[in-house]
Image (cartoon, rainbow, N blue to C red; front, side, top):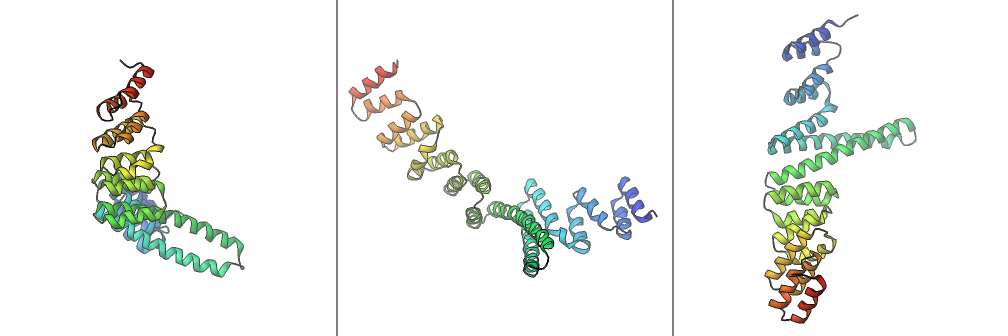
Length: 267
């Protein structure tokens, strides 16, 4: 009853002779074991070649895993290629499922449920691909396309990831806008302040709780002689000494400065 080729494949695998193991697995009654071995060993090139011949439905998922490893290693161009390969495979699979669903609407409710579940699974992987393509597109220099993809995705996490990449690349205006889109208001405000885009930073400051960030904004506004805005920001940063200094040095209002000093008991 034992499948000798399958058994021989496992023995060769234990002795780390993976080429011979693959040969034995492919000759056995369960050739997919060769693909599983290469996948577990992270031999992605071998796994993709095997998947193309013995299990085409696995190509997309293996391409995603390979792309994620390449992204982690910093091989962004190759990662992008694999994310795009996976996306193409998933698009085709979804087209086939949608066509099947059109034919099963009234015929087979059970099959329809299975197809719906499979469609949801593939759409989830599509989102993973979309995120990978957006990140890798930015990293390989096509910033406009990557930013557009992140914006259109509606994915808060992806927007923050891409914003962080852009910030490290010193693409500050794009980074700030994506942080804002990703609902990371403090990060967005910090980057807007860094690139001196105070008009964009101003509406976000109401949502910022960091005293340090309010202090940075106050110093920036003071530097451009917008003293009223600087006072508001220094007050939010609880730096009343700076408020007093502005009233004395720039606004010529010693009475208000004196009142603040008395109320805060500042030395």
